[in-house]
Length: 125
Picture 1 (spheres, rainbow, N blue to C red):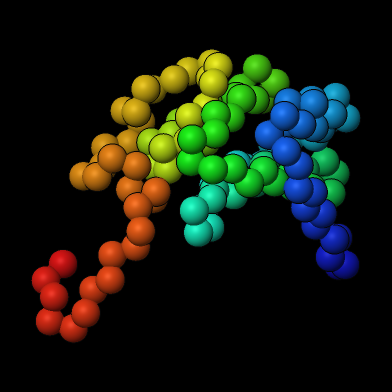
Picture 2 (cartoon, rainbow, N blue to C red; picture 1 turned 60 degrees about the vertical axis):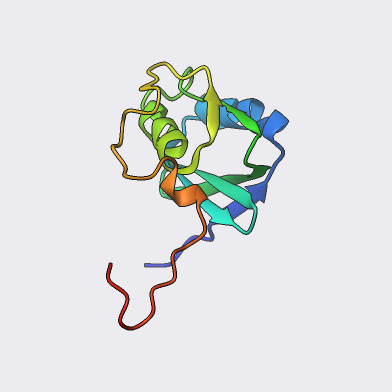
């Protein structure tokens, strides 16, 4: 079995809907949406697959940037989009189902947007 290359294309937020629409029109399925904090920015990866061909598109945004929902094209994306909102504080506009911050119960609002906590030996968790 040979490994297919996994392509990741960086795009701007304004290109997101058009890029996702291209994947939908070409018959790709949405595999996942993943978000991570990189310094003061957020990296959001949208992964698609068709016939074992895996492609990603990536947007990099600041914390106050609003991201359009892709749930009009990929209905199941609302789970990932609510997760981005609840854990990272990313504002997603136009979700087909918006839990308004209640999908996850967390002790700290937007916990993954906070700097990591450093624990030293002897500290109590």
